[in-house]
Image (tube, rainbow, N blue to C red):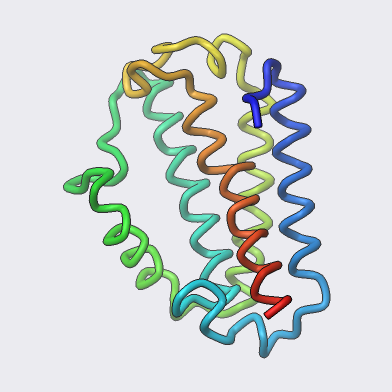
Length: 164
């Protein structure tokens, strides 16, 4: 799939993939939301916390860029080669949260992300190197990895789990 060419297209795709993710969750009982094994040992609750954590991570990078800072990504002390370790840390950080708390955080984080994207300029989204931390890429690449592409990835996994 090609990258969106405008902010409007980006927002439409982000909303569409989030709706697909929400549809994949429709009708799943609380018991099943907590059942491990949807993605590895993760439950749906764990997936929702994971998605929210990555949305918030992106927003923190964006805000650092607005201040002229270069955030250490993906997390201080880790490189992209450590992504499995980081995802395990995310799981560990959120695993004891209640399902209602994770669901509320999932909803709040998504609204915060959409509000932030809606306020971004086309220049911020599409200009390569607009922020020092994005280097040879536009912000769009990082946003999509933590929004519509991420929603699609996990919607696919939940849909496959439901079919199994």
